[in-house]
Every structure is written in C-alpha cells, then in structure tokens.
Image 1 (cartoon, rainbow, N blue to C red):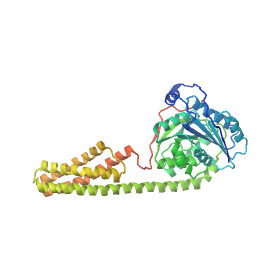
Image 2 (image 1 turned 180 degrees about the vertical axis):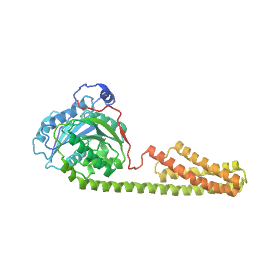
Image 3 (image 1 turned 90 degrees about the horizontal axis):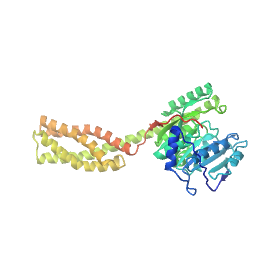
Image 4 (image 1 turned 135 degrees about the horizontal axis):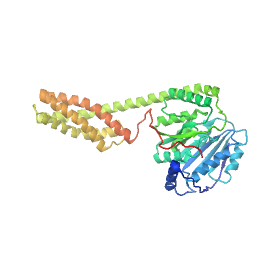
Length: 423
C-alpha cells in the first residue's frame, strides 16, 4: 500500500451563487468564513476508485472547487482500489498542487466497501462522506450534505434520486433491487444505493470502519449501522446522470443474495436486542414504580389512620395528594437514575406525574365517597395502576425527546430544497 500526502493547504476563491443552492452556499460562507491551514479539515470526502483513469482527475478537482468556492476546509481522500490502469498516476498528477488531497493505493482490488473503510480510517473531518469517481451524482450536493450533518451533529445525509437519465432497464432493475433490500431489512429509506453520502466524522471512523461488507452492499450495511445508533437520516433530492454503462449486472446483484440474507439475519437479531432492552426498561419502571407505590401507600395509610376521612372525598383526595408529594421525590430520583438512566426534565416530570396524580385523586375520592375509608384505599390502588400506564408513556417520551433511545425506526426526513442537479 502506498500513501501520498501533501503537507499544506491552499484555497481558491470562486463565486457561484444562484437560487436555493446559492442560499445554502451563502450560509456556509458566513458560518465558515476563513480557512485554518494548521487545523483539521472540517469535511473529508472519500473517492473510491477502481480503473477510473478517465474520471479521477476531474472528480478531485470538482470536489476541491466546490468547497473552495465557499471557503470551507476539505480534504479529499482518493483510494485506488487495485486499479490496473493509470488511475493512481492520474490521481497523483491531479493532486500535485493541492495539499488537501491524499492518494492511497491498495495493492489489489477489494471492492468499494473496503476502499471506503480505508478512506474513512484516514479521515480527520468533522463530517465524512464519499462520492463515486464518475460524478454521476452532483458534486455540488456535497457541501449541502456536509452543512446538514454539521448543523445537526446527530444526522447523516444521503442522496435520494428524484430523477435520472439512465436506460429504462437500469432504472427498473435498480428499483427492484432496492425493494428487495428494503423488504428484507425493513429500512424506511427511499434510496439506499445512491453513490453520495455524508456522516458525522466520529461515526464514520468508529462504526463504519468496522463494517464487514467489502462490495456494493457496504452502503446497505452502513445504513443499518445508522438505524442501530440511531442517527437521523436526511434525504437530499438529486438527479443522477448516466455517464457510462452500468458495472453491476443482474448476475452480480444475484450473487450478493447470500450476503444480503446474512445482513438481514444480523439486523433482525439487533432488533431483538433492542426489544430486550425495551423490556428491561419496562421491568425497571415496574420495580421503581413498586418501590414508589410502597412509599406512597404507606404515607397515605398513615395519614388516613391519623385523620380518618370517613366519607369525605375531598379530605381523602387531599391526603392522597400529600402522600404523593413525599413519594414523588423518591420517584424522580429512581426514574432518572435507574429506569431511564438520564436526568428527566423537572417540569416535564411533574406535569406527567401530575396527570397521574389527578387520576389517583379522582378514583380515591370517588371510591371513598361510595365505600368509606376502606374504599379509599381500594381507589388509591386502582388509581396507581391506571396512572402507571400514563406516567410510563410520559416519562419515556421525555427520555426519548431529550436523548433518543435505541429504536429500529430512525427519523427519516427529506431536505427541504430543490432537486440538486450537477453544474
């Protein structure tokens, strides 16, 4: 393996601002106005290349130009995946005048996934993405996707083909392959295979470098890792231009069947682990609720023994509220530190709990009015059971809102921008 690295950065100032794309680019210029040659690059773009001697130079220069036009630091990492043509030499020649380019040469061809893993492991950017060397996908989508990832901090941005000019047979076969993949893996993503994606840098270096797939199914496995974290998925509409005949034919796609099945099995196992985690959380809630209930009922029983409400619904309800006030302090600590293992919002906790208390007070008062002091205790227990369902749903919402819990269904949204078309 050979590694070629230039020691310094440089920047070219270009202006190309028009329409909605220009608005986002102007945002970049304001947010990241200066380059810092000695600091880590803000964005890393990996270009996997196998026998791309006619495309690699243009790809390198196009990526540099897009980021330099908005004064955003970028490093381009070309991974020559065992090419038998002049890809490596063309990449070296294209990068001679830019220290922002690394060229990595692999001794033999391993596949797109292996090349991307290699590139990600050498990246330093806060956002790390890739684009196919033939630039069938618009290179000007990269800064937009980088902006979305950097702005969020917990999202990845993937291209979603809204239009393309490929031959009909390619579009149909691609659509069928995607449907099969989505069905097997339960991925709520419109386009898994578009050759341009962007991820948070730490996620790319720690998670995506450990993916097992070395071929075109790497994209699918990477998205499965996104689902398992989970990260938000932002779909950026793009247009794909047909540059050359498709490399992956029907037989190549069919040969990936066993690997796809293996991914599906592993993903289902991961979903089962998440379900088990959810079950354990419910059990923790139940145990915490049981302890909290003991405190609540003990306090309530002590109060009604000291000041029997007889058939007074208001007195019973007030004593129930007093008992809850003492028990709620125990409940807040236990639910925050044990059930959900994060600090719940104080206001949210007491709002949700207050709803549960209102249910308890209503049932306690009504049963006391109907059956007397003993009925009040029955109403208290029935109220606790109903309030438990309400409060669990509420607490879980607070935990999920503050810091999303493991889930099999990531948030997927479409970027509110026009379809990105190449320059």
